Image (tube, rainbow, N blue to C red; front, side):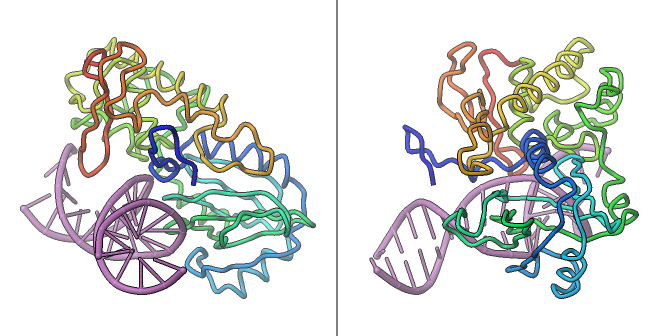
Length: 283
DNA sequence: AGTGAGACCCGAACGC
DNA sequence: TGCGTTCGGGTCTCAC
């Protein structure tokens, strides 16, 4: 595992959120569309939702059609009409290689496409479930809107946020309010907007809500452009994935000077989650 | 309704 | 070197 200059451990404090999953989606879409699945192997039975034999039999006999994303989920649409629904949860990540070019650790599951292999690593609570389209739809039905949907407006954002009365961060990471925001990007977008993540929602001024909406989009777009913050490259020579790591301004930077005002960043705990903010420039 | 706690899970870090 | 212990965190569910 990589460590930075201060010997701070990286890679297990940040879990894949929308930009990381969207980065994966793009990389997978390029590689998998139309490809026949030639082999499947399940090392960890809890990864899947049906007996391994039935899973392997179904998946091996079909091909990928498209790769979509909804919130933090990836949907592999299969030509059989079924869907593989992936959630990486805590510490999960993907690697694209061959039988020789793989990571020096066990994968919980692999899917082969000719000589290429998609490795599923770090699936502790994560899963890859084989579902009908209807089942997949039902699973995702309660998710909030996609923050980067061009049809998603500031007015809609304000309406959703105002349905909640608690702490701002609670609403931002609630998948039923918005799909895809997790612990890290919630703190990052609050910092970008200059608003403290533990503010009570009713105390937010209309102008602050507008700023939050703008920051939500700005931070996610920026993260996407830099390939998200995943530590592990998706394939050998991958120079994009994880490029956003150095762009995180507050998350996991407790005690470091704020990049905007140099005030030391506060690390706090709220509802058993870490929260990072700057009391110098966030109100 | 919001908050907190517990369960789920297991690789990695750490202490001895 | 190697064992045992601790930790973390997204999501769901339940209690207050």
